[in-house]
Length: 206
Image 1 (cartoon, rainbow, N blue to C red):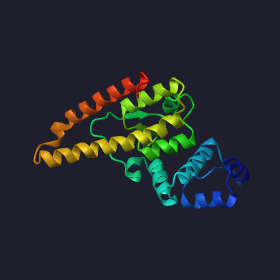
Image 2: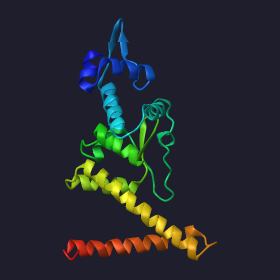
Image 3: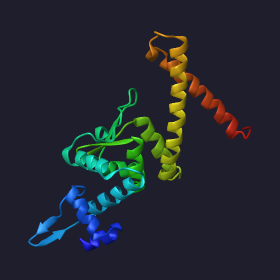
């Protein structure tokens, strides 16, 4: 226990508290000796990363319960299933392969916080095949995963603002119209404007 606490950068008292709360699984016992392994260390580092991002111990306990029971962790984190994107089921090893060893506890916590990842049993679910492919491609090009996730948070804010703009526009001027039918128009405008903006920035005109 002392060795595990030292490697995780916490006190033995904190480690005992986490065990009592069920935040980490029990150790493997051989007689009177309790053995901890790398899985316990990874869980502790993830807990620390989640705490640094403002999650409460109660929320982390819910997430841990989802890991242990096989319940979708999206429910525990209050995540909403996307309506158009295709989720991807991955093993932890496959996820690590996508991002060239950059699946650190901090990056994992950030991806969970963004809602990109949920957990179902022993599998990890990425909510979007397109986002998975794009983010892993950026990492292969040399962009750190932490920077990709940080940018994703800003993109999320801008996307929410654009969605609110179009929703308000439709509700104001086309009340009673099926909003889903107008969805492709909104996406086409955003895609065209982004393309033009990239032209300006990449040519140095912006």
